[in-house]
Length: 282
Length: 282
Image 1 (cartoon, each protein chain N blue to C red):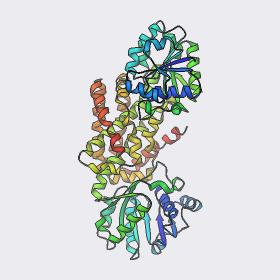
Image 2 (cartoon, each protein chain N blue to C red):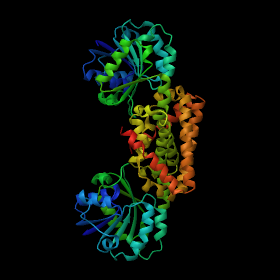
Image 3 (cartoon, rainbow over the protein chains, first blue to last red):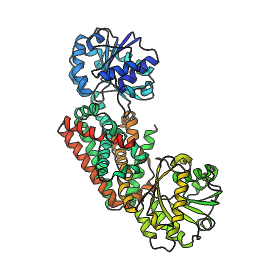
Image 4 (cartoon, each protein chain N blue to C red):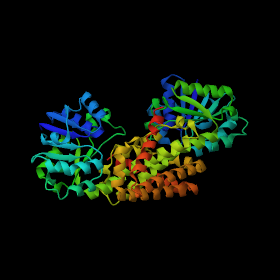
């Protein structure tokens, strides 16, 4: 590709830019971000070759990548499709897909758009958190591929493959339902755990001296960006509420077993749940 | 020390043995374990120099280390104190301390015992999971030091320091109350998350293809050993139930905000919880 525009120069957009550069997939990367500090950093870190404004950048690009919070994607994507050049592809990297899909479904240039979700990230954000290997050996989902031009889907799939990312396809609806359980819910459980312990810490300053690597791992996602996660929780509200309810049921079950001091039932529950090991090692 | 007996050759006991060897703190390490496979592995891996039976090993040891589940510690510790040589120290490494403390409080040889909890571990268990650096830069708690001989506490503190482990002291009661929040609760939240997703997976086989590193980190502790954790949950029941209730309150709070699609309140909650970053980096 001659020219790629990356809108959003944080962890995801920045890492994607670095990866494209690493393997020589883009001659020129233009960065667009409303956060001027991020723009400055991205330029200094060599994440982008130049900065630009959105419309001018799109008009000269072969590929436009939207790596911004999903509410911003929803606001900007229809406008970008209004003026997108005939052969330019726009792809997003948002964590919920139904809302974005719905907003452009009937757009005359819908076929230029490929909806994707690379399941990759860390608890850190901003250009300084970006690194080119972020997508390596991760899974990226392309949603509703039949609504995009076949050539556009092929191109996006090829780019992910070159980044060593495995690609699977599914509908937006299936994506949002599943991701509520394996991504959004674990953010909720981390934030709730973090807040529970922070509340206790108000009276017990020493408590964090006792926090080990287990706590740190479980609470890690509570460091995640509010700007990114607030709109995700709201957009995927229905699926997420189902997931939270299923989770509350499990918490209640464990609580009951502990109240009853029912060793055999607890042991069986923990042992069944150890099965997660089989699945994570797949 | 000439001779050290390690009772329990799993992750914790095995790692402690390897660390003592690494820095030349023990001339001879005797391993004791009711699991014959673990005995065989510990010998093969060079974790212990020899195997022994409990009483004979204690009688020839300068230090006896109990790295077994806490119900087993409670069963064996009073017996060991019955026949412990005058200058031998016995230390435990259990994750709850009040129950153990209570059971030996009035024992005539209570002073030979030092109650400790090294806050170190991984989700893996058994001798093969052991490694000498496990305790490095971790915190180890010595409980109720005034109930032990001063010389014994000094010795145990010195050993932990030689393992690069920071030592703090507190009462058993304070330990159990705090550790419910920063360790036991995070195991509960992981097990509940693991079980929630396993239940969904029964109908949605593809779901784990979508699990990323965030989910993996949050659910990691659900791989933990049922034999170790069942008695911990039961022994620390009261504190843990308080912690679970505080946690349920937070989950309910978040659920309500999501139901209300209240972006500003969600953003504020997530942003407040990001404060965990400050505390974990301390």
